[in-house]
Amino acid sequence: MHIDKHHVHNHIIVSAVNLESTRKFRNFWGSSWALRRISDKLCLEHGLSIVEDPKPSRGHYGKWLGDGNKPLSFQNQIRQAIDAALEQHPSTFEDFLKILEASGVEVTRRGKSINFRVPGQKSRTRCNTLKGDYTEQAIRERIAGTYIPSVQLKRSNSSVRMLIDIDAAMRAGKGAGYERCAKVFNVKQLAKAVAYLKEHGDMSYEDLQAKAQATTSWFNELSTQIKDMESRLSQNGELQKQIVNYSKTRSVYIAYRKAGYSKKFRAEHEADILIHQAAKKYFDSLGVEKLPTVKTLREEYAEVLEAKRKAYAEYKQVREEMRELQNVKANIDYLLGPSAERTQEKEHS
Image 1 (spheres, one colour):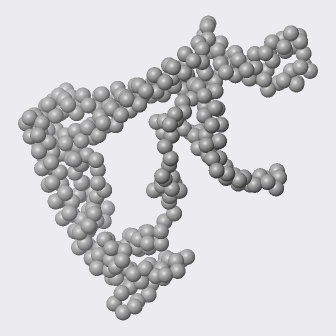
Image 2 (cartoon, helix red, strand yellow):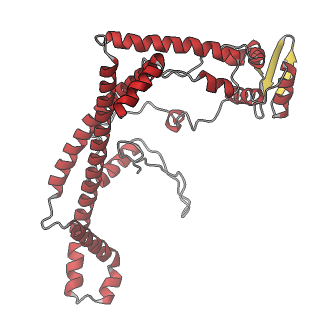
Image 3 (cartoon, rainbow, N blue to C red):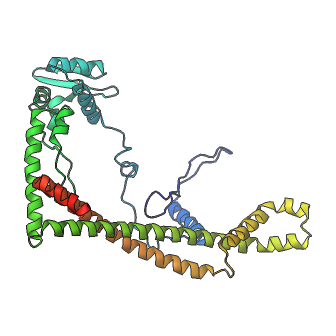
């Protein structure tokens, strides 16, 4: 089980082999449902929610791994090698090919085409089949600094995006093609920022600033609320767990007490006694005089979980709105220049 997402969940991994015997796991028909019933039972015992009506998964192992963990294809390995070779700033295309070969990429020519092959790859890859920034013509232009990228920036959900710091990009070694593309991009974003003000009733700069501050404040408030609800869910689940543990081991502890706290009895039932004492210690730390029922806690857990789901849906919507407003404001500040800075300094003072 892990809690790195907004919904606490667990994965069940089955090893096909048994190191203690010669038996092997058989994935019989319906074995996944049997595992699900066991998992649901454990979750309910510890006060955790379950999926009442799960839908069959249509995913695959590559999707489960995620983009960051997928093994690179041979073509992507070649693209990475090309980028690494270009970072060494070769002066000619032939120098680029030598750097590429030195990095372990096999380079062959067949007629007018150039082919690449990385270790482990059976068939060669033609350079021009890589397309985009990695065709032979594109590589030659990248070396000369005249290439205009086909996809310069990743798309964003926000309709207005931040301007590119062209000076910083040029100092980082970007070519003239990048500068031209960045200038066009900046002009488009400034136009979008102005259009945003027009679309919202000719919004003034002061209104824009107030709306951006209000949205940011509400975003922070929602974030605080979600964290608080997550804390309540965690405490609720832990309390349910301790109540179940206390109830299960109560008879053993009563027998232990009747036995005069016998060392022999404790040695025979030490695990249950320790669990019971830990639960009692947990209740004392909370200062709870009367324990709530597990049913009451489960109902409260479901209510808080539903409230958290609604808050998180609003949280994502407000986050996108906040990002767009911040981008619009930053771009308008750039458009207004020093006058906007003076206004901000005056308001601050």
